[in-house]
Image (cartoon, rainbow, N blue to C red; front, side):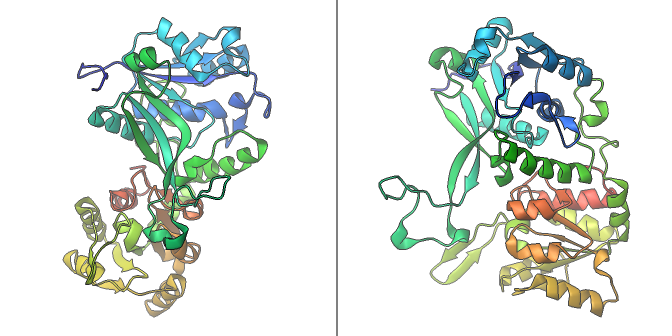
Length: 417
């Protein structure tokens, strides 16, 4: 039985633990990364989420407290006792310390070492937490790697029936981004995770955490690419430290807005972009694919805005052609194994430059084409290589509204959806 609070409006607070004694990277939590102190990325995401009654920083270091107050003066900073700031002190000890000082029903503990966390991640997880009736929630990424025990036994697959990647469900791996915990669960178990646990799946690239200097370079590149797309949600009001929704200030850079104005055609991949990537088979072959009606409306609105829409997929799929017909999309390329070559040919045939074409895809077979078009986009759950190439990354996953986000963003001229 769930021990989650019965109130329909529980008090939810966010806790960001910021210890000053990092050994691998000196004062890691306030070291600038992609133009901001590391901790500000997580705090800005908490502000963007708009679900917290209070956002609290727990720190033992006055230098960290000063940086937080300089950037976000309304964030509450709680002094952490020295015994809770040692190398061996647990995160749970800090959570219990806050529980003694602050009233809450649910505590969200956010790790600053996962700066790729967004406000959308936090709100999506909160919705899942409430709807599932869970007592605690852990974030994870899906990995399609094969794991083994030291004794040579497989952990997550059968070597005699080795699955293909696209048919393999993979394994969920905890990424340490953030946790939701009810007060009662924390009190009863002493742990951030206990009783009924829900797992919230995040994009694959959020598996990276900053623990070592080499991690820093990888994550900084990802943050810089995200920042080149638009103002980080909530940044416009960051000096005020207030909750904010994404607004007119959160727009694409001038370079990206110029690119948007030149776009005449937008092509969309099918599996993993217009669909969630799942394929359902019967003994007769392919049975069905799942499409989003909201994505369909987005495509229609894009056409009404005067931008041409096409579909390009490596699958020779009658279902994809049927969906295109339903949406009145006449330009449909199926069974395309070299999408870059096909788009080059299309541009030449129609008197276009490749800068006038945009493409939204999700997997490695989309990457060569994404590298040559004027604007590349992808769903939130695209593979990391594609996310690195994309100038627009949706909050939603493939088949779950990502296409609609991209369409609305293009129509709005680069405002963050």
